[in-house]
Length: 295
Length: 297
Image 1 (spheres, each protein chain N blue to C red):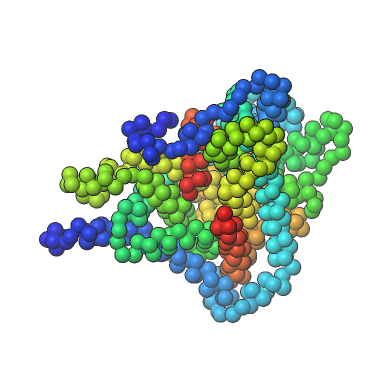
Image 2: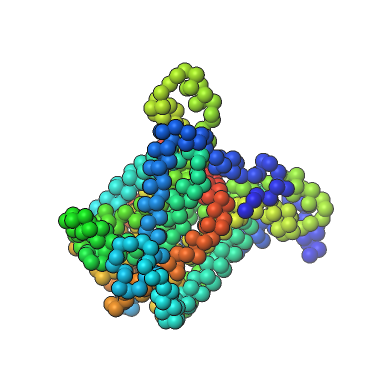
């Protein structure tokens, strides 16, 4: 939650101070009206989420009532959906894929970002520009070649097939490079004199200093993979290999599925990220600002 | 090992740097650059995935030019962009501007606006799809019926379906833009406002002469970020129209959905690749315009 206090002030994210508080309490009419309108707006914003959860707790006969609070709340829909077994697998698949991809991104994006930032070597500029230029290539353009590649290597319908395109990202590399800029070169020199090799310096000296950036990157990559749809839809074809979004999409499309069950599936896919957000709220918002302004 | 020991520090650094970069360079080459090249090559070929690949020259592009569906899709894609971007820019600025001036329960209000950003597009597309159904199923029409107002056809109407599909996309992105705007507003030095206060300038002048001009970089970022998002819209459209993807009558079909359909339902790889090249070009042009705007600072 809190930024490590042992890091030099220069590399503490300045966004923290940007986001702490506004000015003024609702002490006059104008402020009160402003607060009320924003509050109503905020309630409207979360209505779709509220209705999703509310409907997932309703009995079938109550689903088409517009009341938000279920008359007799039930977890029957959850039991039904989970007993069906498929959601359980999709959930597990999504967790595995998002976790491995996140770890891989944290490792490689920061390694590459660090190398491009702190080393001077021939080819540095070319590698940097090449990686940066991949930001301009949309995923949609690559899905056809990736599909053909997966087909010829037998990667279709496998975890590896779903994961391989996202194991490193230019966005993450660039973000980490920006943050390594603020790690003082003297720290690295000192470690070198102490006899650490370059790998140890990166891992034990530089990495701990960019923890906030690593955490922000982790959140982005995890959320991105948890909700990814187009590529998993293309590369998977057996039900057991689906991720949650792909599974939910097919599930909703089945002819005999009722809306309360679709809402339950949607809730199962959404609640984990909402819970994570509620726990790490300040931290995530700070990460969004860091990534948005630096990335 | 011996050879390594004899290297100078500078040369050791080069060895380390390339050792660190070896796998990533291979990755970017094989998973990003090579496929990009392949996409361009396939766009000049005729290929249905099973048969042989034959060179077709510009045939795919000519076919695209003469395809009325493509022009409809092209138009839809830009309608998503041209409605979605300004609407979300204005809404997020208004909310951020006022939220910034409140302290009371500030964090709570911010949370309400940000929560939709943490949801998955697929899940929320299904929630909104349910909202849009007719009586007695859909929430919106049920509420309208309660007040005795005429029903609205959302997803079945060729005119209403596109805005209906766009709404959840705007809704989900709003929280992110609000946070970025608030950070931008906070970054404006307070001395500007103090000077304005001393001069007795009204709030409107402060807004139009100080806040908005100084927010230009923030706005450029948000406009580009959301433009690219709307040009690539897919998840919402696909999930809200699964019974007839991009329907009714292609009225909601964006370019990415056309690509998906052509490639993975029609197995017309060459034609689909040509469409991806068009998408690439559009995104490139939009990004270059943005760079221009930033440079002119």
